[in-house]
Length: 112
Length: 115
Image (cartoon, rainbow over the protein chains, first blue to last red):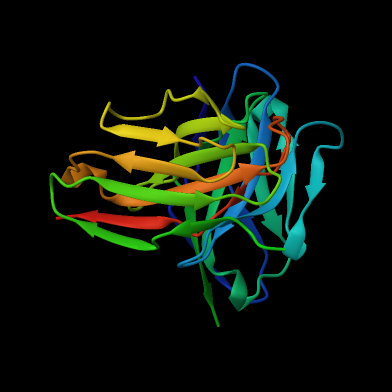
């Protein structure tokens, strides 16, 4: 069965510091991987996605993620965090039928 | 252009009442999804439509949950005889073609509270 693990429930990062959010997945075939961000009162917004090709994927708002098949990971990174990045981040895995399986999310707090 | 819209944004129901949640997808999007997001959790898949056909309803938690998309556009998620465990945010998403690599665009959700 498909599953996604986000081991960090909360992460606090100082503004301007780098960020890495962890995501591990379990999927029987070639996975399609996604990172979404959810701000309070708003819907989920896609940051980036991976389905083939270059394993380093660039997304919006300066985010990137690297697919590592050997580690079943798809970690999200940003070199310099801004206060506006404070939100909940969800990793998701899907396949050819598009049903997405989400992790439980990581809440990012940004300290001044 | 307009994104996915959902109504109402908030719904309070007494246990045992029926509720209907509406989703207006992005115009022209073939696929439509419903997810349930409990407090502190990630969204969980409920059901999926391609045009008016409901292709997957494996995530519906009980036969009290029913979804329809009769004309292949607007969709309604109906919950009969609501229970407290139905309290959650219900998210609707749409995508253009239904392929696995398509981006799903999410609405703001309907927060259902069952008293």
